[in-house]
Image (cartoon, rainbow, N blue to C red; front, side, top):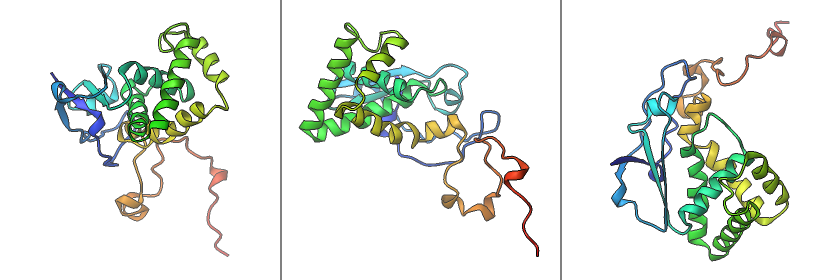
Length: 209
């Protein structure tokens, strides 16, 4: 079975457009599942008919974990959805959060213990499986952890993992950095399709006096 190895992605910051416009194929390498070896494996599929399913070379995705278990990764993905809920973002994007936290755990024994203890607390508080608990219960549990080092570690990693990647750019319609495309002179000034259009009062005519 061929799968998208999202653990091996390298950001291209390529052109993206809103869901109604053309978006180029994502440069995502493929790997075979048998080559994904580690302490855990997260895998799933992209929803048929979704934007990312149309961009990716395969609807199946997989992600290798080096230190954390598959169950740990699933719990961290679920916590990420509580902290930053986006219905449009598929699990493949939230899996990047688990990947980045796993990398920290693999490099630092202290970080590994912090994450594993935090995941265990989430599951215990949910009566067995945080990921399978109701949305209301998951939010209650996460709120009860505000102020802890585990909460801060996961929330802080969310900002980079969930938003600084080509999959999120495509979903939100963010076209990438203007600097990497020669600036606004060659790109045009008004291309903020991913934000509401400003009112006329917000952009008055230039002063000619």
